[in-house]
Length: 316
Image 1 (cartoon, rainbow, N blue to C red):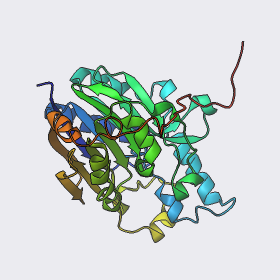
Image 2 (cartoon, rainbow, N blue to C red):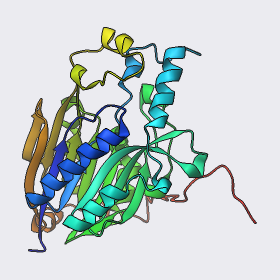
Image 3 (cartoon, helix red, strand yellow):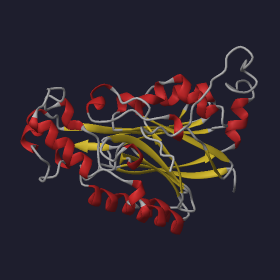
Image 4 (cartoon, helix red, strand yellow):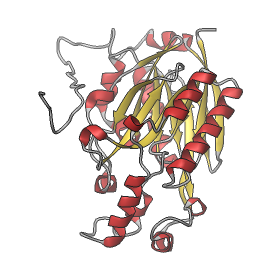
């Protein structure tokens, strides 16, 4: 039925900073979700190849510290260049199984020189086509030591059966204007991806649902001390201060009335399934629609720059 959408929340850990092994894990998870009838599968923020947890445990802000330089270089080498077809196998699986994908990656963007990293949320449709790459607008706190700020190019929504789906990374879900940019394009299924913690998802998931009268899917990754590969540079220094659990999950789903459909799941790795009914969106928009009948564009209006930013423009 066109009004029903089967979704899967992939609450998994990466093979940390190992992009080949993490891609293989993503592919296995995608296949499992598809074989269980899912039409959309969502993975957490920066899952491919992992979140920069070392920054909190290795004096990440220390100037010219060799440990941080070497870890950063390792991170860059294991990040993704989409232009080099590094997501092709995932795209082919999406097409073969007719399943849409939201995937958090670390992007080593060629159009910005290929050396800086962007926390990007990639949408792949059911035909296996990459339809948007949203670079996180503002890295949060210590993330700024290793991630670059993105742009508005990826503030786009996509049709998926009767739904219109859009997504944001982590704390940019707290930014009212990017949320509004998605609402204004008709978003009614909001995807929020996180590195992995109940504290991030337990409040804002329901808040966004109530504000937008949309479904909200929050997906977090997992991470424990055991998920650091032995090949990690300076692993001893990271483990010296790292807690046993760095990401406990917290993936969840709220309905358009802001109530839980799936309460946050913690300390459990795997796929979480649910079926969404589009008709609930229409029901809840009856008394409030933030960009429709309950808006005043003659008084307040948002202007969005969706140009992909680059330092150099060539006129050959």
